[in-house]
Image 1 (cartoon, rainbow, N blue to C red):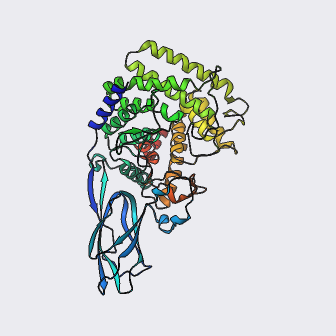
Image 2: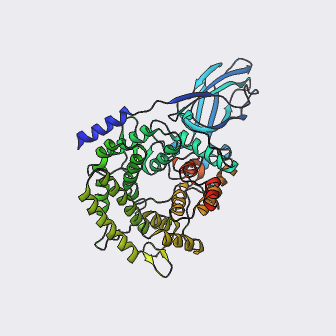
Length: 501
């Protein structure tokens, strides 16, 4: 097993992409006025970038007689310019806050800020200089990085709204494409499998960097634990290493991610290499079920993700995810000619579906319920639809009833909105799917988004599960899928109009 994992990592490293480097400068404000203690200036780079900056600084007035003490703040949107990091007391490390404090002993100077940042705006504050001189920023330049080749993307032509949705989606994906598909270039800057699955779909519709998807699949297969379980995320620096975080749904998502990759590339060799890893995820997940074929519920935070709604019960949603992923494994088994295994898996799917219908579906409500409290949620209904527990006609009715059910637990992330919209498409309601896509992601654009956010609750736009929005990510991989919906799923006015005539 160790030799196989080492071979997988070696394969992944052979697929490491080149980075496209571009140097950009702010739109205005260079050189700056003379800056004294307490002064600040903001540089707007005109779009969202990921990279490192270089400053050219000088002094004005008398000879510099003390170090210049400055603070540099990197912001993905305007709101962050006014946030005070000192107010942050959340549970995510303060180390993610994008600020640098520098002393410059001798001016003039060229200052290279070594750390990589994710930003549109750069705010420079003069903490102190002596009364005898002022600081001047003569130039600021950013060296920006992505492994996405912009020339590979055909421009989308549609309504202005669709073009904006597509443009911001592509920018989000682009800036998360580094040496792996990162979940967010501000935070956490590593490879998460839930994000990868959605990034890959958007990538197939846009940049078509399929080798990057392949690299990430091999990285996950090469970093399983001793029991063969896929970790939720992978670190690549200083060495490739799997995290010690495991989630029921994330481990299983390796399977449909591999299936989507095959459907796009027809690369059966990779499927053959990674099939046993995929199959192992179902074997491990099966241990979480009781003798009644219903998944055991858990109060442990993070046992299954689904969404960042902390009130969400995950039991029924997890059952549906299992069914969805096992069905994907059936298809992979058939592609490899493993007919006996496919039949065995199909039998298990049927058992899990039958149990879900009998014990998780409330016939009086016409909705799926979850946990001891029989909770109704958008996440549960969406995943039940995607899993195909009922046929499309019943699924359509389920989602219609959901709109009428006022106490349903709502969605708080673009990640969950993606699956809800997929469920609407699967159940035959493309018109509502289109409207929800435009209203949800469009609301972020109305707030000035150059890239889509990690979290977005229209009723509370700066909600955070971390204790403060200071560490929220405003360029996040799992929110990049409008381009996929528009380009690959026909969620655009032209296609919807053609369906009506």
